[in-house]
Amino acid sequence: MIKKAKEFALINPDTIEKDALRELNNVVKGVIIEAGSGLEREKLEKERNIIKRKIKNLKDFTNEYSSFKKNLTEIEDSLKPIDFIKKETGVIESDSFNTLISQLSKELTEIKEARKTKTPIDKQVLDEISLLNYQLTTIESKLESLPIENKIFENDRNKYMFIGEVKAKINLYTKSDSSPTASIEKDIKKIEEELESITIDDTEIKRELTIKLIEEVIREYMITVGNAMENYKGFLPEFDYKEKSLKLRKPKSTFYENVGSSSNHMFLHLFFSLAMQEIIFKNKSPYVAPLIIIDQPSRPYYGDDGFRKADEDQSDDFKITQAFKLLDKFIAERNENKGEFQMIVFEHISKNLFKDMENVHLVDSEFRNGNALIPAEML
Image 1 (cartoon, one colour):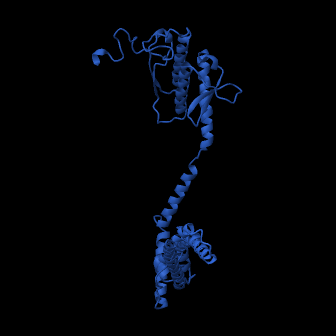
Image 2 (cartoon, rainbow, N blue to C red):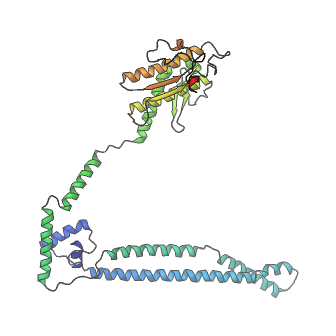
Image 3 (cartoon, rainbow, N blue to C red):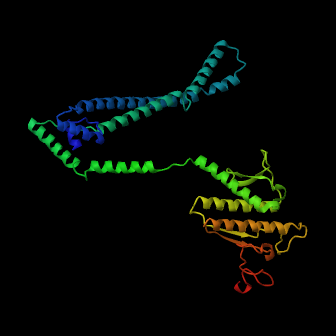
């Protein structure tokens, strides 16, 4: 109906569909718009032809210019012996001869400069062609929306019959709850309500708060293990977001400490792993399972055979016990928060080191004298 109205010049030919309904209503109410789309088409077609001619002329110029540079190349080849003549006849004392050679050398230099592969002229012409092509595309797009010809009404009777048809269809759809316009407006309103209900968090602020929470949780872990951290007992944990690693900083210092000993590294590893699981739990993330498997945290203190290394200090047992106290406390807090978590630890230590810990359960006795995690008969 809108297309037909444009053909009859009742509404503007460049009116978009959203505004066309309003113009059709005006037509029904008696406000007739003489669109004059024929004049608009004629104007655009004239502009299109002018631009096409400009593009053709520029392309012809480009081709001629390329031929010109090709001819220069051939001329340059014919002048190349000049360099040889200058070198071999340097002893000839003749003003006329020297003037001729000098002039030919100058022309050779100018030709070399003129036939460069890329020149400002090349770029300027290509840019102009690109701009004209863009303008041509825009005009052709406008022409597609205009009717090729306007229909002329034979008499007023046909004109008013069409306007009456428009009025009937407008009344039919605008009064119906299922009309396309009503449906679209309803959908738009629903989407706008959904957009307004969306809460967008500032990720920068959230990241900073999360890092602070990680460091706060790890500070509590460091208090739990106490003297097991030796010289780093009172240090402050810092989470390096860029490297995704845990570092220690001395209070009132701006430098990270180079933490030594595998014992301290083991504790940092436990701190980091447990803290990340705690953050995941607090954020209610469903993507990471509440499970950690730890293989022999006592490795810094015990050898592969399960016996404490001879050169280790007697405080090794204390450090291992403190590590298990940390794991036991982690499970206790998760239970208090009505959460679930399972931790499986493979160890070579004596069960006396974690006795009386409420959340540490020995699955099997010590693996010695043939008793192994995987029995020999199953291999």
